[in-house]
Each structure stands twice: as structure tokens, then as C-alpha cells.
Amino acid sequence: MAPLPEYHPKQLSLGPLEAEILNIVWELGSVTVKDVHDRILADPNRELAYTSVTTVLRRLTDKGWLVCDKKGRAFYWRPLLTKQQAAVIKAHEQLQRFLAVGNPDVVAAFADSLDEAASEKIQAIAKRIQSARQAREEK
Image (cartoon, rainbow, N blue to C red):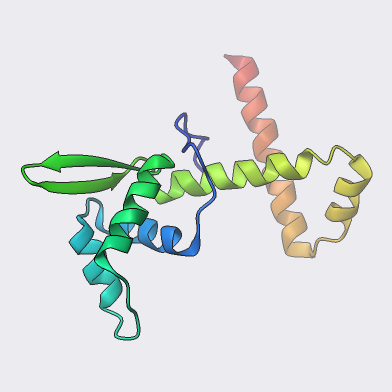
């Protein structure tokens, strides 16, 4: 996985509509409200007001996920992080919350309950951590 990005959104939590719209922005790159609205309404079973899309794009901007640029009379939103960077940040936050439990017995009980595939992943992660530490020490 990629290293932890230096930039972090102000607020990581997203509602379902915010997450859906953020995924559309990641897919398209740079969007107008119309681009997002049209994409959502492409599903014939969906209804969503144009103004609701505007509100969500502004909320994502306030939370630090998007930036808005004005080009002529149009406003374009684009992501401040890639989808992969967001996944790294979220995984890091979840790991920090898990480790904040601070009780080695809880962590050990969790590790003991893992299946073979998960245990192998943990071992691979431990090897990568060790290699990264050795590389830092050699510098």
C-alpha cells in the first residue's frame, strides 16, 4: 500500500450520498453539478434534486475532500486525494483506533481468532514493517 499522504481531509466521516458523489468525482476527475446529477439520474429508479447535489459537493469541500474551481461561469469540483490515498488514510485511522485499546490481551485475542489467510497477511505486514524500519536505520 502507498505511504500515508501528508494531506488529510478535515473530516473523514462521510454519509452514504457523500460517499457516492465522492466516488463519482473520483471516477470523472473534474465535475460540474450537472455531471454528477446526470450520473445519479442515469439510474431510472433514482430521484435527487440538483440543489441536493450542490449541497453535497459543498459539504465535501468543507470537509476537505474536494476543491472547487471557477472557470468562466461554471464551477468545477475535483478531489484533493486519490481514492487510494483515501483508503490509506482510512485504514490508518482504523488501525490507530484499534491500537488505542492499549490492552495487549485484546490485540492478542483478536490475532488468535484470525483464519489462516488473515494470519499470513499479518505476517507479511510484519515483514514489511521490519524491512521499512531497517531501511530507515540504514539511511
